[in-house]
Length: 234
Image (tube, rainbow, N blue to C red):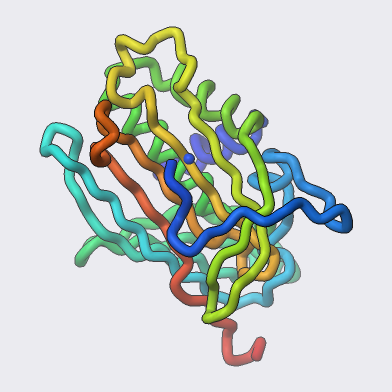
């Protein structure tokens, strides 16, 4: 995973509802954030102590071999002192698939960088499947992130119902290159955020439905499974 590509996506500033998610009526007392604020600008990690780890379950499922392999992963985000200045924090991401390990970062300990890790994967997968331009795909995703719909939502976390925001988008729904994008044209994204959840990001779901709507060609889910502070921070 290339850090410059991730940062490039961030600096130039999804589907059926997740199980257990419900849309809430808008409450006037809470200002609704825009998609850029929700995705890029809210410093979720700044509230957490050094040594905190956030663990996410990641599942990627494909209906056909030509669409790539299905796999499960564990993604762990860890907050730690920056090497150049121990008074500042950075976030590093470790990714385990079977016995293979991969990493990304360090990232500034502000917004949750796992959103960028997933979107960089999305850009690569869509480019590979469509044989299109990686620059065009990234631009479409970047534009869609800035125009995504945001609405209040509630979901279950830690045995409790928490309030947050659902951000959803369909980046290619009106794309002029429908023929080249083919089955990817209907890909949909949903992100669930809440400041009640450690790290802000609770879940992401990405679905590419079949043309007949009777199933999914590709489905990706990433969900927060555990959050732990370091012993010193407890």
